[in-house]
Length: 83
Image (cartoon, rainbow, N blue to C red; front, side):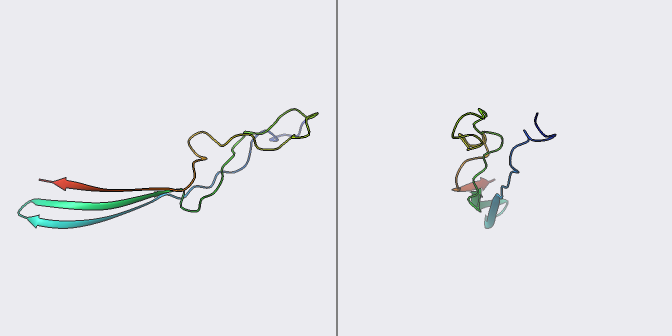
């Protein structure tokens, strides 16, 4: 027997951030510098990836990260030109 909702996994916690600064180049031309930060709090998200064999000594231990959500902190920087 299992409890209702026992296979839902852990809650997910993600915080992404983007900062943009625009610079005028004269006329209608301008450029933007930006920085993007992903998983700012560097939270590990396992989702529902646990060992499910109750006889295993690793029962209910995480065995993988949630796909697309378990990535560690990352940052990227870039420029964009408007004309």
